[in-house]
Length: 433
Image 1 (cartoon, helix red, strand yellow):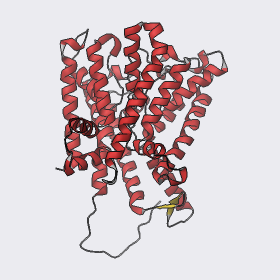
Image 2 (spheres, helix red, strand yellow):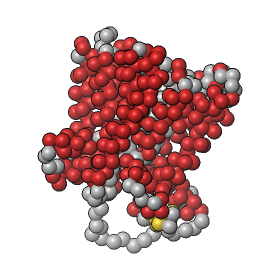
Image 3 (cartoon, helix red, strand yellow):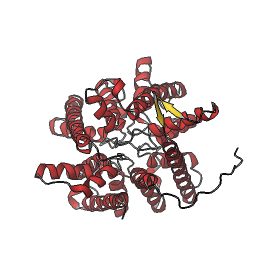
Image 4 (tube, one colour):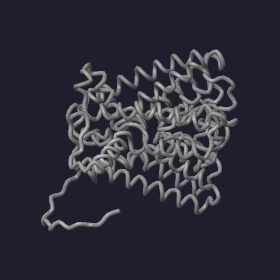
C-alpha cells in the first residue's frame, strides 16, 4: 500500500478514536450524537474549525482537551508526532518511517528530514507557549485564573495549527478590537501557516539570497495576499452595518479588516459576523480559502506556491516563453503539470461537493459554496450554515474536510511517481481555446 494511503488510514483511525473519546460521558455536559462526535473529531484532526455545537458550553474541560489534542496531532502531523515520541524513547525511526514522514510533511526528499522535524518542534513549543502566556493577559482578567489560562492555551493551540476552534459561542467577536488578540492570534496562524520549510530556511541563519526558491515564492505570495485581503475586505465592508459599519472609528474598522483579512485563507477565526458580509465579500473569501497557506504547514487549500506558479505559468504563456523561471531559478515542466493537476482536482472536488450539497439543501447556494470552500481549505469559517446541515450534508462536509487535509498527500504521491513510457508516439496538435 502506498505511504499516503497508509497515512490516510492513520488519520481516519485518529478521527474514530477522537469521536469515541468525545462520546464519553466525561467529555460533555449535554449529550451529543455520534454524528456530532464524528463531525467534530474530523474538523479537529483536519484542523478545519467547523462545528455543529458550541464547544464552550457543550464540552467539559476534558472534552475541550480532547479537541485540543486532536488539533495538535492533526496540525503537527501524525508521523512528526511519532518521530518525537521515538526520539524521546531513544528508538531509531528506520527507513520506512522516514518515507512516511516525508509524505506526511509533503517533502520532496529524505535529506534533512530530522532537521526539519527539529525546526517544527522548536516552532511549536516556542509559539504555542508564548502565545498562551500573552493571551492569558487578556483572558485571565475577564475569565478568572483557571478558565483564563485554559482559554489562552486552547486558543494558542488552535491558532498556531490554523484550526479556528474557539470556546466562545460567537468566536472572537467580543475581542474584535482587543490589541493582544489582534496581534497574537494572527501572528500564530501566520507563522503556523507559512510552512515549516520556510521557517527552517529563515531560522537557519542563511542570508535571504541563499533561501530556497520555495521560501522566496512563499514569502512573496504571502506579502502580496495579506495586504490585498485586508484592503479588499475593508473596501467591500466599510459601510456594512452588520460588519465594519458598526464601528465608529476608522482605526477600529482597520483592525477588524486586518484580522478578518488575514484569517480567511486558513485560520477560520472571526471577529465579525460572517453571515452578515456581502455576497461580493463572500466570493472574495471563497477565493482566499481555496488558495490557503503554505505546503508542509498547518494550512489547507491548494497552497500559495501552487497559486503563484500557476500565475507565473499563465504570464509565461502570454509572453510566449518556453521556460518558466523566478528569482534566477527555472521551474520545471513537471512542477507546472503538478500545479495544473492539483488545481484541477481541487476544482472538481469543490464542484462535486457543492453539487451534492445543493441536492439536499436547495435554496442556499451561496452558503453552500462558502461552506464547501471552507471545508476543503480546512478554514472553518461559516455563514451560520453548519448547524443547519442534515445528516447527508454533514457526511459530505466530513469527506471534503478529510480530502482537503489528506487528499493532497495522496495526490502528490501519484504525481511524484514517474513511469517510463514503453512506446513514444508521434506528436500531434490539439486546438485549444
